[in-house]
Length: 323
Image (cartoon, rainbow, N blue to C red):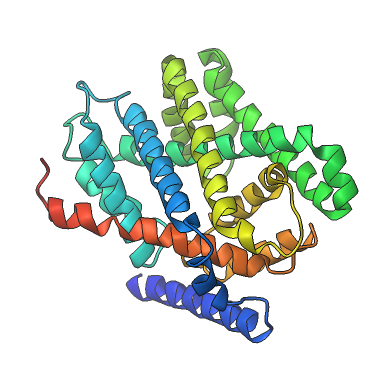
């Protein structure tokens, strides 16, 4: 099993390296842009501050979800440090869930009411709420600016339609989440009929739907997610906008950058390395910008810098100690 795991991660690294080599050799990825970005103003500082703010908000969302099971109020500073440790290990270790597993080892010690199934479910639900918030933000901008985007790039209008389709699916999930128990029971019954995996999916949904009594917290988590992703896209724009090869109104970025961020979450390569570069090269090309891979590279390195700061709470907390 370990050999298979290592082999899969080795393949991901090889894929990322191959894509980066192709991008650099074909001139699509300009590494000199990194040095130039340090001399055009304080963009990196502003972007890093925004990403830190996003992380702080995201930690509060995670704390709210944990407290739906906890019998006591959890320390925000403790959750912040533990969450940051998870982000750090997700950046330096292979595997899509490595950081989450390490984070849960710490979280499990905070309250005796926390079970493994609850912690896994809440962590997954936190990701889902983040995704729904991102889709909502993208859908809002897509609806408002659809006609302008279509005139600018008919190709990008297809991306907007995909945004709206995905958001429609997210709305269905939210409707089921807050629906009466009798309707949820019907969903369980139907899903359990699926061979092999039906009972496992139904069990996971029961964990999700148990949050229906916490509607205010769920709404807060959704709104926090919207704020988080707004800050993230702002950071992307700030660090990359001085190097756009063609004029692009700020608001248009919210119609296609979210799609790139969603695709990056798929564990094809570590942190979207290589794959994200190719993806954003294509997305920016839809709006007549030919250096999308280089622009994404600036944001990728900026985000990686923020993630690496997670080594500080890891050293301060140590392997076992929690204040």
